[in-house]
Length: 315
Image (cartoon, rainbow, N blue to C red; front, side, top):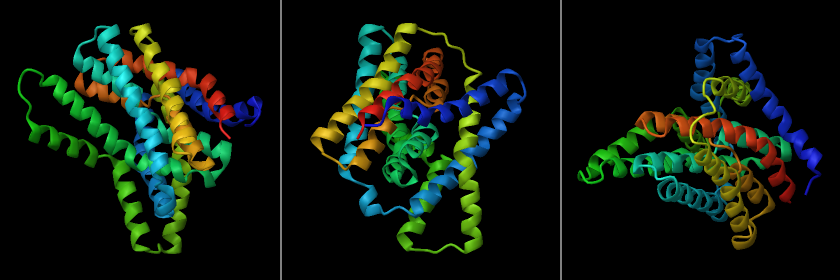
């Protein structure tokens, strides 16, 4: 259990880079077109290459621990269920709105925030569990989100199962991260050795992924406004920053009794704020856009206070 001031030293550089991106967009040092280009690089090139590099070198038999994955994903599903129920029963939102709000409670910013904070706190050797979670993150959560949204939108109009299945497959398959993950598994399972020059180039590009993505994320957040229903935003912050990591901690520590490294990866990943994808999902379906945009900003800001607590509680 590290001293609280040490945990602040761990997370502060991450949020300083994010804040610098926000400042660059606010002062118009970077135009919106430049920010879009930066994020396209981070999401379509840098991050997939980082995942490729990391997964190709993973010890798969050790990284994919059932307790690790169940702790994180059961916590996420409980957070989704609480957010969905709260949106319907407390805030009287329509079912499609409630699904989008639940998605914001579910979708942690595993890569752009979870990886750098875990690495700074525990070192690069502690990231195996993070990458195991991330490799399943998009397929599981996008699949669940799309399935629930399509059911909600077709309520009372019949359910085109083939249409829903095709939409899920299409949404997951076109994710650049999936290309990096798939290529990483291919290299890992075949034992293919990359030429030294290619491996060096991959390493150079992978090293740019996180700082570029953090800077770009800060710049992107400048576009969104902190408005929308404050009580609903507060519920999303509670689910994503407190409930999800609390359930994950309980399961990882007491039920599955996972290794210290797995506990760290699962809980820190669960403790991250919703990513911009939570807003993009709402925007795609045209529901709960203001709430999810506000929740991404608010939860990212509040996580500066909550992440040190989780780091302090972990072994």
